[in-house]
Amino acid sequence: MTPTRSGSIHLFKFRGIAVYVHWSWFFVAFYSILTRVNHYTSPLWSALEYLALFFIVLLHEFGHALACRQVGGQADQIILWPLGGVAYVDPPDRPGAVLWSIAAGPLVNVVLLPVTWFLYAWLPAIGGAQLNPNLTSFTYALFMINLGLLLFNLLPIYPLDGGQILRSLLWYFLGPSRSLLAVAAIGFIGGLGLLGFAGWIRSPWIGLMALFLLVTCWRSFRDARLFRQMELLPRRPEWQCSACQRAPLEGQYWLCHTCLHVCDVFAGQGVCPRCNSFLSLVTCPECREARSLLLWRSHRPKVKVVSPVIDG
Ligand SMILES: [Zn+2]
Ligand SMILES: [Zn+2]
Ligand SMILES: [Zn+2]
Image 1: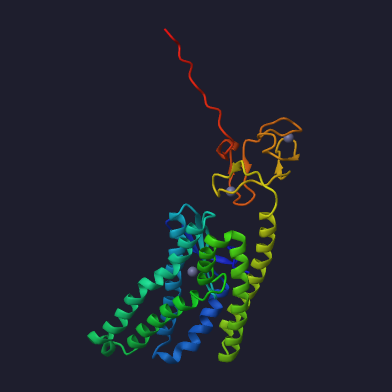
Image 2 (image 1 turned 90 degrees about the vertical axis):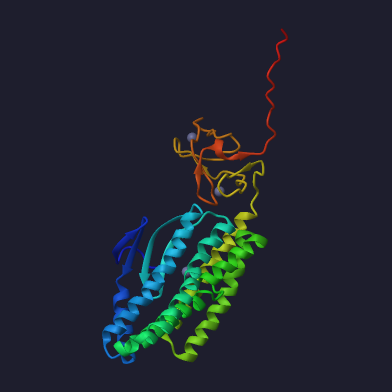
């Protein structure tokens, strides 16, 4: 559903984050600039306004990407497409880390709110409007674009930022799978409402966005149900993944790379029962983090080693 790097043009790289623009962006840019030309005396200002929109979107996405890096997650690309920007972020599987990675995007717009208001109130007033009459419309559009992006992104419809913030807050009380189930259901209702609203104001963009959100909510609901079933499977509480703190599943889920036998790595203390080789890395099925078995925390009572005291 989201754009991929194929069909996208590489623009630049900043702090290790590569920025791409999808080919479909150019067609929509052309169409959008044409529909806004009557607001200005020159189509150049309309083009500038569209570029400003994507510059604000880009700052917002960088907010997500840099915050995700800050909490130890991975984020290395941003793709701009007609429905906005997509920052490919993979924060650690903790509600706090997810919350900060998501909230940092809208926070950028909150910071831009007084900045864009100041430009609108100040630039035309100091004589900019006499210099160029387009300046008032442009700075006003800048303020409204930023405000619009902030409000739209905060709608509690998954996977919009508002929906993801709601999910990470619910995560504290409901856990990872039930919080996703809840926001996918809420998002589905919200998506239907948005689709109705798009029909009412006859906005093809909001309609397209609503369809995108509905499909994503539907898929997330299905994933969350599978995820929930997995959570209810029997586990080994005496072990714990050092990355996500979950206890591993009890059963044969791990592949031995030497003999390709699927075994229960924890039952054999890391040794494959068929070929007797030691599995150097054990992947956590939930957070996909691969670590040595020695790094999996074990809660079994440790044998106290007492140094013998030699009586002289
Ligand atoms: Zn965002
Ligand atoms: Zn894990
Ligand atoms: Zn083996």
